[in-house]
Amino acid sequence: MTRPAPLWRSLLYVPATADRFVAKASGRGADVVILDVEDSIPPDRKPDARAALAGAIATVAGAGSCEVMVRINRPWRLAVKDLEAAVIPGLDALCLPKVDSADHVRAIDEVVGELEAERGLPAGHVRYAVLIETAKGVHKARAIAKASPRVAAITLGGEDMSADLGLPEPDPAVLDPYDALVRLAAREAGIIPLGYPGSIAEFTDLDAFRRGAAQGRRNGTEGGMGIHPAQIPVLNAAFTPTPEEVADAEGLLAAFREALDQGLGAVAYKGKMIDKPIVDRAERIVSIARRVTA
Image (spheres, rainbow, N blue to C red):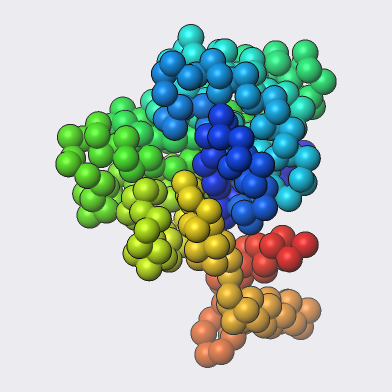
C-alpha cells in the first residue's frame, strides 16, 4: 500500500546541540523540525551533536506537533555514525545533503533498513528529504528522485549549489534552470518538490522572503526550509491554499461530480471547460486544506 505524501510546507533547521532552541522548536509552527548535525555544527563538535540527538529527538517528538527529521553529514565515515545516532524511535525522516547519485541513496537505505529492524521501527518508516547541491547532483536528479520509496521530497540547495558553480552568492536568475530540473524530477517521481527562489539565510527582510516563498508556490513547489522561526509563518502561509482557493476548488469538484452523475461528457465551471488536470489540481488544493486543519 502506498503511503500518502507527507505535509511538509515548512521545515525548520535547529542545531542539535542548541538545547534552548531544541526545547522551543516544536512550538514554532513548523510541519517539520530538522535537527541538524551538518552545516550548523563545527567539525570538532560533531560528536557532541551526535550525542545530543537522542534527547533532542525525544524532546521534539514528545510534543507531537510536528515531524522530526535529522540532517546528517555527507562523508561516509560521518554519515554512518550519524545514522547510528539518528535512526531511533521518534525519528520520522532524514535530510540527506549533497546527494549526487542514486547509489548514494540506496547505500543509505541499506544502513537505515538494518537500523529500523534492530530498533523496532516499522520497515520503511524513515523517509528522506534529499538536497541536490552540486552540478553532478542536478545531472542525476531524475535517478535520485526515484532511487528509493523512502525519498519523499527533493530540493535544490541554493547556497551549496552556488558555491559549486562558482557564483559569488545565490542568484535566482542563474539557479532557476537547475531548480526547474529538480522540480521536474520530483514530479516525474511523484514526490514533493521543495524550495523557493532566493536565500534560506534571508530572515531579516521577511518581505523579500515572502516574495520568494510565493514565487516558489507559483513554480510548483509545496514547501520550503527555514533557519529562523520568523520564516515559518511565511512558509506556512505561502504553501497553504487560501480560503478563496479552497472554495473555488470545492465548487469546481462539485460541478464535476454533478456532471458525471448526469452522464455529461463535457463539464464547464465559471465559463471554463474542466478536464482531468484541472480536477487533479482542485483535489490537491482541497486535500492540503483538510490536512492543515485536521
